[in-house]
Image 1 (cartoon, rainbow, N blue to C red):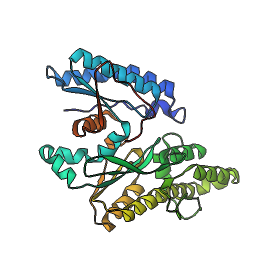
Image 2: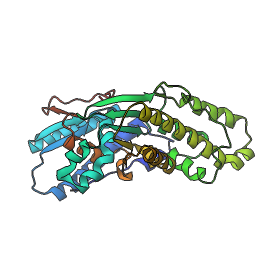
Image 3: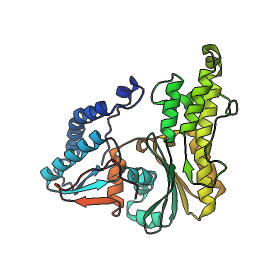
Image 4: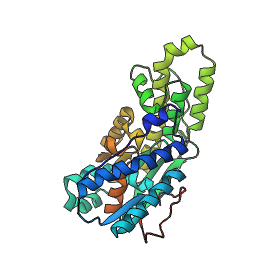
Length: 320
């Protein structure tokens, strides 16, 4: 029926990243106009349920969201459900498929299971499997920083601003990805882990050894090499997972899924494995209510039904 998003990127850009207190205030001030727009569209139609993210995420933002969802569910005398934020990302690549055939979605989706998916965002890097019974299992995660965080903080070190991923990608387009040898953690290991803290440290030491002039001249090459190190680490573990077990489809979601080099690499993996690939649309890669509503609608195992006064949030919720 409709989707409305208020982006906070411009607000946080001046600080080089998300400031939790400011994010909470933005939620509080921008929810009413978004709600007003939604009510104008739905009119007198009955709302069957209210879905809300209950974790993981910033505690202040989650608390505001849950409080607002409780209020709406009470006012409308309808059901209230909590949805794991990461399950929203996990199912976001399937929104387009559902739009094509709502009545046939369950059957078509089950034919694409087991599914291997990768969530890559500023706060999470997770490789997961969806079984034929729609249950989830985590295959690999980061032992320290997320891939998106590594790109954002790398861009900050380079003086490129926030959000850093798109800024690095833009400069990387004119650079040589082999010019600098940045580390890729666990590449030669069978351990299913990601790590990006060493990559950031390597960049910092590299920059400390360069003059301002040499940095300006080498900036495209540095960006291309740094971005490639992140993407190769992601692709390596995804490839290992594909070799270790059979899958019927491959998926990519989260903010970093907008990176063209990563998308092309995933499409290449899918083609070599003769698998259909599903990548979230741009509007569903960053945090958005649409993916939460979709997950609540199609995935009864992933929601947390609750009475209006019982639903709480847990910032440390795991995908399972």
